[in-house]
Image 1 (cartoon, helix red, strand yellow):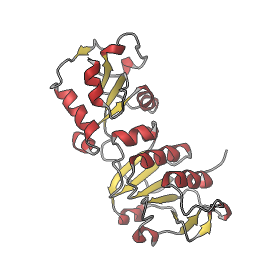
Image 2 (image 1 turned 30 degrees about the horizontal axis):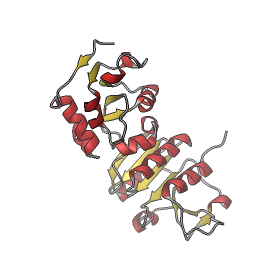
Image 3 (image 1 turned 90 degrees about the horizontal axis):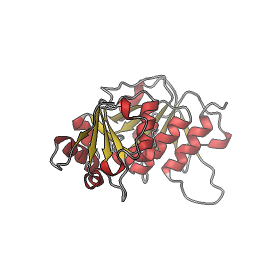
Length: 255
């Protein structure tokens, strides 16, 4: 571990950049970096081989709560707790965080089990779907334009580390889905086969649609399979993150 650098000025360039990442969901696209808040996310990144540029610690927790992940960062920074509070949207800030470089120009992998997000707008839903995708063996998530920013702080928190094991692409169009060399499976609340009765393909690309509008007609027209989930309790529809977990588990290979 390098000798820690103490920063006390709110105007420090590093802290300015981190505040931008916290306050603006798409700032990472301009900066090419992401801010991971908390020990869990940082450890998840390290477990997948990601190398942090900077480890940031609150002075209130230094050195009483030293983490065994310090040596992995190129630089270690200690800041006052008051400044750490500006690097979170939570009521209580985490005692530490990482700054990571974004992946450079990820490319679409046509044969990898995939989840397509068709304008899913809620950050919590997006993060939860990424977590389910990673858990059930999907290795790629494609976000069509209009989907919540995949690397925003809220999506990162909801993803609980799933980001670091997935090939993530965002800002794509419906026509980009033509490059996928596998069946496209869409969800619908009112038409298609019943999920529990269907012979599901693997690998495949599941499409999860907008919270209110569902899958767009343009994407629906490209699908080889349409599925609906039985709801004996009588609800009109499911939350998209809940529906995604059910669908992804249903078609994933079983041990």
